[in-house]
Length: 414
Image (tube, rainbow, N blue to C red; front, side):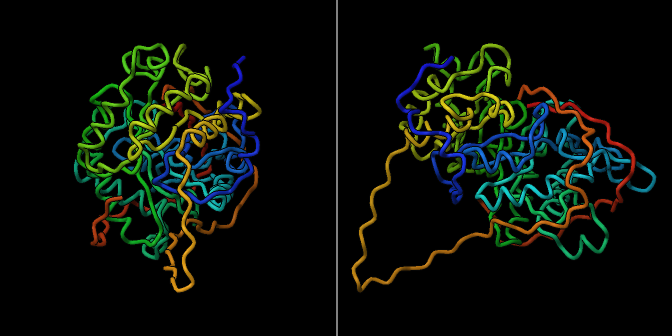
């Protein structure tokens, strides 16, 4: 049982039904991973009922250099059926029957959430970029398959696992085999982002030891919008250390950001959403999280971005003060944030200047089925800077058609 905290007296349950406009510069954003929860509810459930701002779909966990038929592979737990694409006579591991996600992603986007595709995870451990050429080709492929629909890609019957749905960006949760190529991928994706009027984002999820063996190079040499550090499952730098009075290394990560490819990137505190979402001893309660959040939001008001959680289902199951763990984090963040200064009323002679609003809600494609048969098994977890020149895409991957063969479930984890 968690003791009552006056800061949490605000009804966290009331936050669940609110629709808001996403602010990438806010100090109060909550990001969460979704796709690997045991018996997880549909994505739309979390968008409608929790205080989430960014949802990372986990995972694209097999990379083209290791994938069957030269395609990547995906695993979203029970949210897709077992159908995969084929290339020639090769059955790939890229899921083609994700009809629930096709329906639900636009619901989330209409509610003001950003939905990003997470690359990596803890399994399999073969994920790797083999060359600069393959890094560029991988970025081009991601843009063609999950970015805005193009006539060129449609004419070759290119794969679109989410149909016409356009995601809001890409998350790099790289856990194995070093950091080669990821800065190249990020820079290439940034070039592609200039081809659309929609706002896109890129995030990184390093583990807390510095340097991170997989992502420190990319953070230093390319521009991430958000860096949510996994402050758990590592004794020397976890959020639990803050609670125990031994400190943790958020300050050092601020220095990493300031010396990196985007000094204005927002730095998030990554936490497990329940005691079952991380190794034993790394979960911290909302009461423990509140002073941590307050301290670092006040110390680094330009850098602090919010809280990242692993993962959505564990948050939903961890009900505290009448709301999920994510609801509690949102309540704490809002309580710690400085109150906005009232804007003076303009004089009658003043002429307001209209502001532009980025496109955030792409339309979805038609749906074949409402409830696919789950065949992928979710796994346990451990865990804008742009160029002005449009990009000439590299040679596209071979087009593929859906196969009736069931995909082999993989066990992905951050």
